[in-house]
Length: 52
Image 1 (spheres, rainbow, N blue to C red):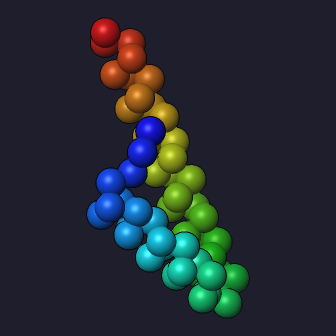
Image 2: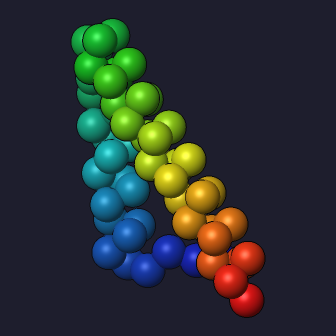
């Protein structure tokens, strides 16, 4: 799966934000948010596949 230009830009922006963050609590918060989003994406994908 390929990202479009807008998605690539957003991904790069997030990576740079992560790289520039030195606050461990902020990184932990971000990791929790990304984990939640990843799990929601997996659930949505599973739902779409099961509907076909």
